[in-house]
Image (cartoon, rainbow, N blue to C red; front, top):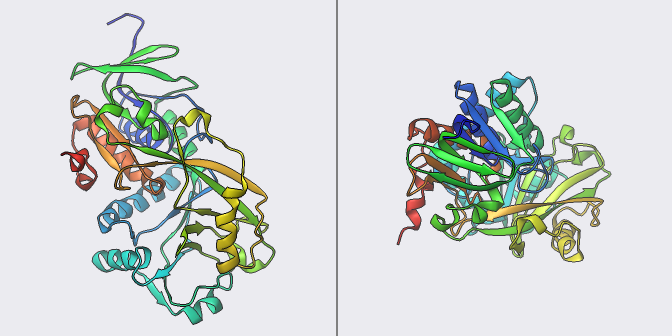
Length: 382
């Protein structure tokens, strides 16, 4: 080992939503940890930006996520207490779609299996309670009171800031060129330095397919370009303080979601489905095109006619889609002291508090008591 090589207990590569959380958990346990990222904290080049992210418990994607969500809620509240910051607001979530679709039946199943409160609403009564919406005829509607949203950049900044307060070293603006492991030690080479540690955590987001020695063991991860749009509103009932909830609609032409207005002037809405495939995350087209606006404008015209169809602001984030749209969290199949999280498929941020804990467990002890087995790499084995 070179005398100039810095050594750590754990190195975390990628300090966005998941990496910053893992760094915080490790540092809080007293470990000597390094976080490395080619971008600054809470940057807008990846998947953890755009003001807000929905958090919910009646998880229609799969009921096995619910125990992780319940722990995530606990950890978000602990993070708020430790930092003194408001990071999560529970304004409720309206979910609507066909009774034979995926969203409403999936939410009802998760709620039933795990005892989550989920209110069944009649379509004719929804407009009285939530005047922002015109629910299509024949749709089924449920409302989850314990759902809400996270302030996404503030969550990342808070995890990173508290990690450094607990002694973590955060090296930003420094891309990783290579890494290696002999099973007991890892070596990470960046543009500016070389580091060594007992274990390595890889949370590269959209760059998972570009990380040496990681892409080869993963199934194909498809990166999609996802515009986020802020549309003008004028009526007070769109504001979060007036009782406006978050929303998710499973429409015939796609899935759409959004948030109450936080500023009284605009609300954020986006299409969850679709998205152009990205080959190079560094060269994503971040301009706004008519094809980005059209689907959302059509949804607003049909379901939220009080929202102006032309956005006044936009951002572009990235979805890293696994083949089955579920997360991949595991130890590297060749190097047991290397763990990773990838393929969070556009619904991962709400889990960053708890997945960061799971990754920290795996890096520190090689195992975790958290129920993540259903997210292991083994499910893609031939």
